[in-house]
Image (cartoon, rainbow, N blue to C red; front, side):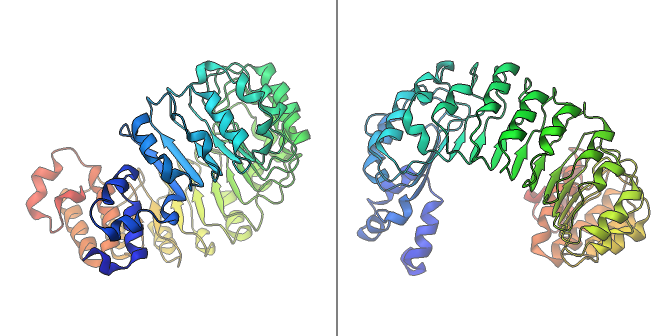
Length: 447
């Protein structure tokens, strides 16, 4: 019966099973045996869960010889076991989250024996707090992607002795790396870098960012979020990155508002400056026709800037104004015809006619109105706009009986609206479900 679906469809269904279950499936019949041996099924493999002991991995090793993208996530796994250094087709290896993994020698052997391996993710691995063996491996020069966040190591600079061809580098949440090492590392960052993430590094300083901005002028994506030591001085380095199109700098509270006015990034398409001192005048410097994602949550942006946003960012698809207390009027936003996600959580928008106008946007599918002045009239209008997903709508101030009626309406109108039911209902007290269960036309699991 299953095979009537077709080999391709059954193969896609098989991908949803655990890899160890593919081996068991072979015992069912010849057809299943053939399908689970197909090379396409083994090109991308994800081994997650405590079931993958070294013994289980050894059982899978013959099939893994044709794997190109291998992800292993087993927290207590110390080593992959013998034989994994023979995977000659491997192009990408991820050990992210294998907190007990210590066999750095095996990783080095895999690099030496396979010139095709160009992507390595060792985030949150243990390695005994040392990277000496890995950093001294000449085969590191073949890597183009290296993710080494949360490593709990005292220095990252030695890595760049041989890793000179990197295009993507992730060193997030390296808490033990001191400020001088970050500065020294920035001086030897590969000039080929196009994507750099240094989010959550508490010792990252302005000096390191300036050095990085001088050296890595080809960067197109930069993430500096939650780095508490970064101040206004870092913007000098960022201003050198003229090719930048994605910039993430949330939570940089020490950057003074006036400093943003000196930035000029003409190619920016994705911008996250949430929880910073950004004001209207600073935001105007970033606005360009190609901007598609803008997150200015918890900043000083006001109504005065929104009209300029609507007029100059026609390609804007996502706009996050969460807790922008200066935002009270969104009447200009209907000009953003490509807008599909709008977050007005915690704003002071009170004119419901503005909200109605926004809901007529042809691409809009998600709107966040939590903790705002929402009335029953507004909710009823929203529930008739079945193309809109109500995300975390705070309804405690509205009568439960009214909300049940609206949720039943949504259930009747569109199956896809169940996402709205889930979030809207959760904001009631815990006894809400039991009290109103019988009046619901939809399944109680929706809560």
